[in-house]
Image (cartoon, rainbow, N blue to C red; front, side):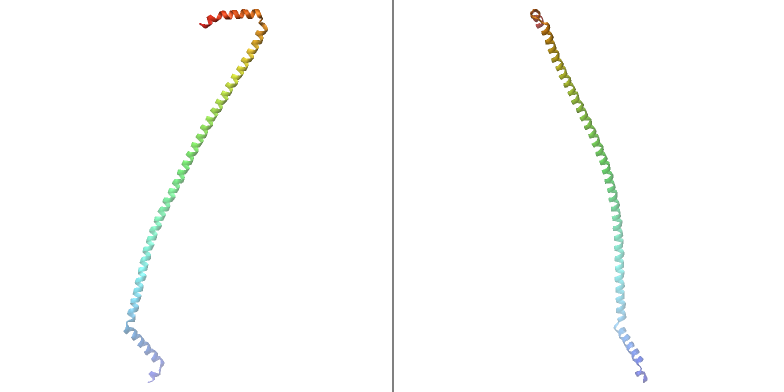
Length: 163
């Protein structure tokens, strides 16, 4: 009975008893079920990941379309703003040109009025000077006899000038 004194025998027997108990209790089935459940969970996680990836790709494509649309809209807004700015600039230039022309005409009118007023003043001064000169000449050439004769003639012409 040397077999009972050999430690390898006891280790082998213990291992066989342990494996037998594991088989009797159905541990391999539990392990297989556990592994199957874990595999199913992993498969479900993979499906969820694929679904999420597809959703993410869809969202990415949608956001790219939106971004492209926003870029086009921004480009359109910028071009419209440029056109409007050019239109405003043209209107402003036309308005300024019209205002300058109007002010030029007003200045010309004021100059013409000033010229007319100056001419009228010169004429008035010339008339006053002519009257004063005529008065001096008449006073120098007119004596009492001539003035009486001039008055008589003027009185005679009054009735004919009144009709």
